[in-house]
Image (cartoon, rainbow, N blue to C red; front, side, top):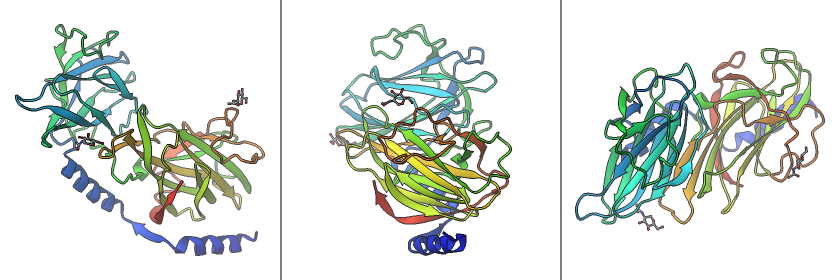
Length: 380
Ligand SMILES: *[C@@H]1O[C@H](CO)[C@@H](O)[C@H](O)[C@H]1NC(C)=O
Ligand SMILES: *[C@@H]1O[C@H](CO)[C@@H](O)[C@H](O)[C@H]1NC(C)=O
């Protein structure tokens, strides 16, 4: 197709459902919702063990009993670690969100026992980074009232994490109070991106990737060609997918597929799109697939950021959320001919090499594209 006709066709298709998104509008709605839910970090502290820094996994426990006459029902848990974490409630594994040294936050939901409960976290950081764990837990009682539990020195800690530390019966009498190492908003942790409902992917969590054919730093003279990219995201254990938000852009053009359904396309390096998708009940995983087209020789890149919200199986009143893109992984890309069916969930991409990270937002030569919301949400 003549490139000009291609541009016009895309523009006509896109012009139908666009509105310019101001990123500060995301922040406003985010604050409003987080304030309403109490799932914010304002009163929580960054905690850690007082042991020397380094990658040794640390263990944290918080025992929780209800006040006299009340019965615990459920917990919504907002949690971040400057590194990686595994979260357990009453010995059951809830999840281990993607490890990152620029942490975003994850939200988990759990049913509680009426009286005694134990929240347990194994956390580690990488050598050379300050650690840090921060959490806010909104608990609901059987009478519908709520309380907020924050991370502070009432949590117990031990390093290295002993085997079985997450089990309710584990003896933590030798453990020390966690060390408070900072208040929320303070450097080096700063304020974090918090999951939203409906989900919203953030540009500040976005990466530009390309295939491994061209070495990092040499993406400037890519000839007209097409490359395919795939990334697969599983839901957390015991949770089902609800909705997703995907920011995407490419130099020069892209078509976005989610779980095999074509969601949209774009052809403007200065303008990224953000799509909302709703997952069919029972979807086992999310496959985001992007076909990138270089129309003329020049810079090549695909911009992506993914946020997913999940709901625990059998509970409609609780939404868990997670951001996914802080590195090029788990993006994979083709280097040769693009095989038929490459955008479908069943396609075997195990032989595809990992994509190469070109940079995190904002990255030269693309700078800061505007972000345009495409509506309505697409069912996938
Ligand atoms: C959430 O819904 C479940 C039923 O799906 C109910 O048992 C539980 O009490 C509800 N929790 C809250 C906090 O409303
Ligand atoms: C996917 O392909 C690889 C070889 O590229 C093969 O080893 C593997 O068994 C395949 N997996 C499935 C589920 O077919």
